[in-house]
Length: 331
Image 1 (cartoon, rainbow, N blue to C red):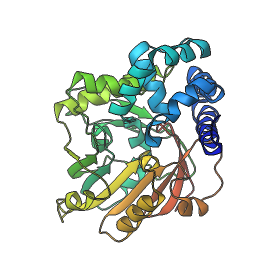
Image 2 (cartoon, one colour):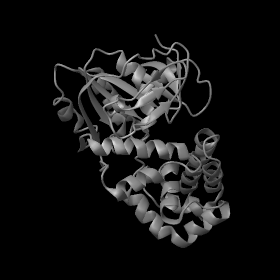
Image 3 (cartoon, rainbow, N blue to C red):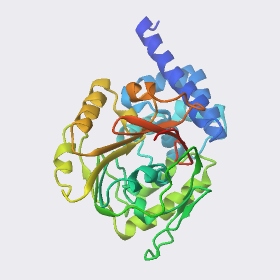
Image 4 (cartoon, helix red, strand yellow):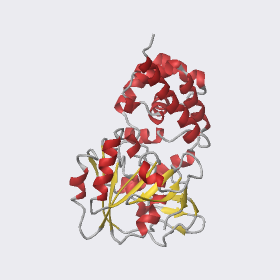
C-alpha cells in the first residue's frame, strides 16, 4: 500500500494535468486536452510520472516526449499503452530535454513596451531557448487596427504575427532599434542544428499548424544571423551578462513563460529583487501565479490561461500565451 504522502503526490500530479487540460489546452488543442485529462485519470501514467524528478513532470514535456518518439497518440487508450510498453525511452527523453518552447509570436505583446522605451535597446532574454524572441526588430506585426511590416532588407520572408489588441494598447509606429542582444539559457538551442530545431517543432501543440509555419519562418530569420545565447543560470550567471550590455543603450531584461519553471519561490523572488535593484528595465510575461504580488495589483483576468505582462513589477496587460492577443489596462 502506498504511503499517504505518496498518494498525495499522485494527486498533485493529477491535478496539474487536469488544470493543464482545462486552462491551457482547452480551446487550443483538442487532442492535448483529452490526453492531459487521460493522464490525470490514469493511475499507471501517474505512477510513471511520479518516478521522475518534480521539475520533469510538466505536461508540455511529457506530451512532447511521447509525440517526438511515437507520434501523437490517437486517443487515451493508445497513450496509456505507449507509457506501459515504452516508459524507459520516454523517461530517457524527458530527462535529457526540457520544455524550451520558443514562440516568436510573443514578440507581438512585448513590442508595445519595447517601442516606447528610449532607443536604442540592449535586449537580454532570460530562458532564451533558441533566441527567437530576441529578434523583435526583424519580424512584422498585425494588430488589426495597425500593421508594421518587417524590414525590407531581410531576404528571408520574415513572419508577420497577428495579435488581437484591445484596450488602449500603445501600438508603435516603428520597430525598435536594437544595438545589442543576448540571451541566457540552461541549455541553449542551436538554430542551425536540425535535431534541436526538430525538438522545437515538437513542442508546438497538435492542431496548431500556423504556429509551426511561424516558427519555421522565424528560424530562417535567426539562421541568417543567430543571436548570442550564453549557457548559464539566471540566479548565478545573469549579472555578468548584464554587465556586458553597452551603457549607451537602454538595457531590457525580459522573459516570457520561463519563471514558472523555476520551482523555488525564493529563487523567483531573489530574481525579482535583483531586477528591481538593477539598471535594467524589467519586462515579464508570465502566468499570474509566478509573481502573486504583481498579479494582486492587476484587474481580474477576462479568462483563464492568460499571461500577465508587467514592466518593472507593474502589470499592464493580459496576454495570450502564444502572443495571439493583448488586452491593455495599464497607463
